[in-house]
Amino acid sequence: MKRLSLILVLSLFVLAFAATPMRAQNTPKTCTYTPSVKFPAEKPDFQGILQLKFNYIKENLTITGKNADKFWALYEKYITEESKIHAEFKKAMDEKGIKREILKSGKGTDEQISAYLSQKMIFKDKMYLLDKKFYSEAKVLLTAKELYDFYHLEQSFKDQCTRRQQQAQVAKKQAQQPAPQKK
Image 1 (tube, rainbow, N blue to C red):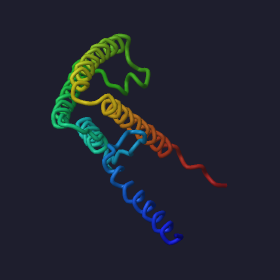
Image 2: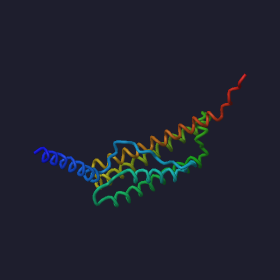
Image 3: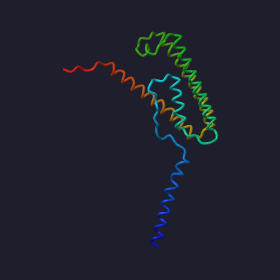
Image 4: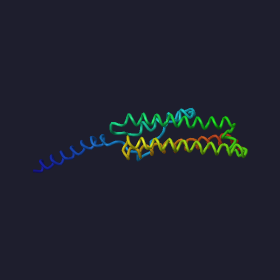
């Protein structure tokens, strides 16, 4: 009797242990964590950053269902449009001779600042309309959870880029400061 009970308990244990990996494999990845971005050693240009963003989201977003290909085509189109909007903004700034460094240093004229703010509002309006269009098309292709995970990954990417930029600025300031002299 003891032997039969032991075999039964061991069988249940083995069955439960064997069933766990199968169930875990069928469960789609969710975005409850923040994966890290693999930045290249050199500083990427804006196109490079968009490509990093696309790859980052594609690697970390699990889409189940038949609409995955349609979604990735839509997202690629979104990235292309986003790039065009950024290029238009940069071109407008270049045409007006407005450099970001001048504005940040506080040496910009009222005319430059006004032109920058006007262009920034136009840029934000275009980005808002693009985001709104993307959302309305994406919500048809993805489940609510997948769409939430997409936006979570997109924000995670932005946060990591911001952190990396801040770290680079701190390192640059430290490199510019003279080393303390020993007496």
